Amino acid sequence: MSTIEPMPQLDGRLVVVTGATGGQGRAETLLLAASGAHVVATDVAEQAEDLLEESAGLPGTVEYHRLDVSNQAHWGELAQHLQQRGLAVNGLVNNAGITMRPRLEEVSLQQWNHTQEVNLAGPLLGIQALAPLMVPGSSIVNIGSAAALNAHHTVAYTASKWGLRGLTHAAATELGPRGIRVNIVHPGYIETPMMAGASPVMTTAQLALTPLERVGAPQEVAAVVCFLLSGLASYVSGAEIPVDGAFTSSGGVKFMSDMIAGRTNH
Image (cartoon, rainbow, N blue to C red):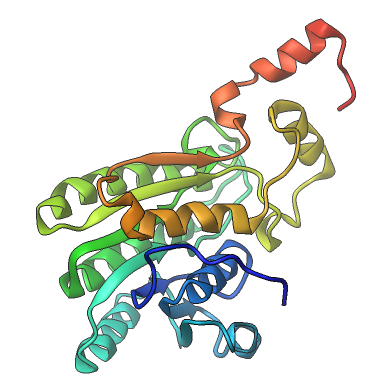
C-alpha cells in the first residue's frame, strides 16, 4: 500500500461513506482511516475483504456494511445499528452513484428513474436516516459532478447531479441551526472504474478543455472531502467546490485560446 498522508482534525470522528469499495469512495475511506477516523464503509457488495485488508494497520478503523443507498430499509438498519451501539455520527459522505450514458431521445424511463433513485434519492435517504444521530460540528459531503455545473449529454446522470445541488443547499439551510454543515464537491474527469468505459475521444476532448491538461486522481477528490469533514472547514457550509483542473471554470475558453495560439497538440 502506498503511503497516505493523514489529514488534521479527523482523529476519532465517525464517518459513514457510501460507495466505499472503489474509486473515489475507496480513496476517501483510506484517507479517513489514515487520519484516525472510524469509517463505516458501505457499498452494495456482500463483502469487502480487500478494502479491510488495505486499511489494516492505519491509525483509524474501517468496518464494512452492505447497503443499497436507494433502499430506505437498509438506511434504517444502519442507523439502528449505530444507535444501539451508542455511536454518534460525525460525518456522512454521499459518494455512491451510477453513470447512465444514453442521450435525451434514447434514455428510457426505467434508466431515468434508476439513476435518480441511486444518485439523488440515495443521498436524501442517507441524510434523513443519519442526521438524527449527528452532533453539532458534524459534516455532510455530497459528491456531485462537473456535469452538475454545465450541460452534459448524459441526461439522466446530469439531471440527478443538478438535483443533488438543490438537495445540498436545502439541507445546509435546514440543518445549519443544528450545527450540521452540508457541502457538495464536483469532481471532473477522475481516473476511476466508472470512467474506465469512457470513449478515448472523450478523454482527448477533456484534456483539450482542462487548463491543468491532465485527469484527476481519486486521492485529490478525497483530500477535499476530508477537509470539508474536518474542523478546518468549521464555517464552510452550502459550498460547491469543483475538483476538475479548472474545466468548468474555463468553460471551453482554454480550447479556443489554444486554437488561436496555434497550440493543437490535443
